[in-house]
Length: 108
Image (cartoon, rainbow, N blue to C red; front, side, top):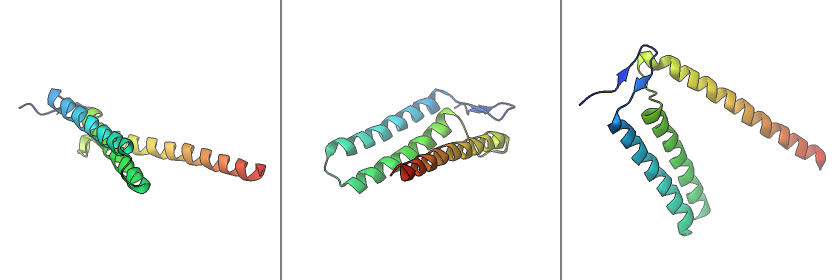
C-alpha cells in the first residue's frame, strides 16, 4: 500500500483510497442528518444535537481526507492558517450578529 506523501509545503497528497473513504463518510453523515430530519419521530433537541454533531464530524472528515490537514510538524503552518481563518470568520459572524441585534434593539 502506498502512503500519502507530504511535499515541502506540508500539504499532503491523498490517494484513491483516502478520497473514497472521505466521500463515503461524508455521504453517511449527510444521510444520518437527512433521516433524522425526515423521520419526524425524534424530539427537536435530539434532531438539532444530531445535526450539529454530524456537521462537526463532517467538517473534520473534510479537513482530514480532502484538505489533508494533519498534526505532523510539516503541516503546522497549514493548521495555523486554518486557526487564523476560523478566528476571522468568528469575528465577522459575531460582529454581524452583534450589529443586527443592536439595530433590532434600537428599532423597537
